[in-house]
Image 1 (cartoon, helix red, strand yellow):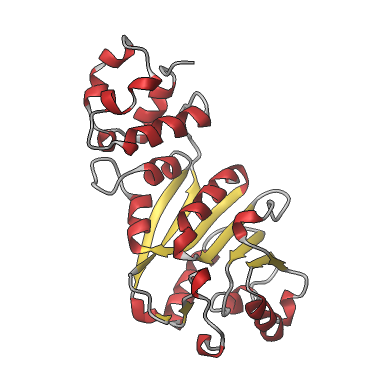
Image 2 (cartoon, rainbow, N blue to C red):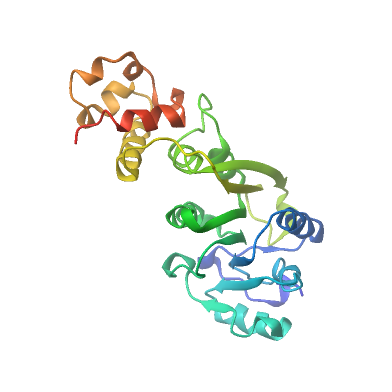
Length: 255
């Protein structure tokens, strides 16, 4: 299989992974995990799919929106018959009953939206292994105090342990993207932070980082009573707060 034989659709952000060493490295990471049901997002030219169809005793489903790629995949891997979900990943319903894992070389222009979709399914996610633009991967994995620590970091790390696995050179793809890539893994946290509600948590985190150069007191003043805002933590900036700090503050927000 070669990506060069397939039409590239820029509107879908398609870059075909052609480095077999990278594909095998991702699959090795996958095989170290326990799972029964697996969803591949954006199979494209089948760089990962060809390894996934060989894994025994799992239920595999593949999401792909591009007709040409679906026809190619069905021709190359007959085992995918009735296992392809022909749709935009952002539009699909939960693909399995119960728990499942997610893997993919994600289209970079919608990678944050993909993450939020996975967050919505977090109770049913065994783990996720995904290829992202390097900058996005770094943002997801960043800890407090880091200049790229932000909304994605906090919202994902509240529920998942993030492992930054390895980086991928532009030349590993056809055509080479203009950015470096990185593979990360998310596994659900056993102990999640004590949050009043997820809606409050999301509202607080987004407000705090929306004006990240301001102190928390100025950035989130509409969400708290004046007396609460006197607490010294509100003199900090958003990137200085841990995930647990944000969780604790949800209990002090206006109702």
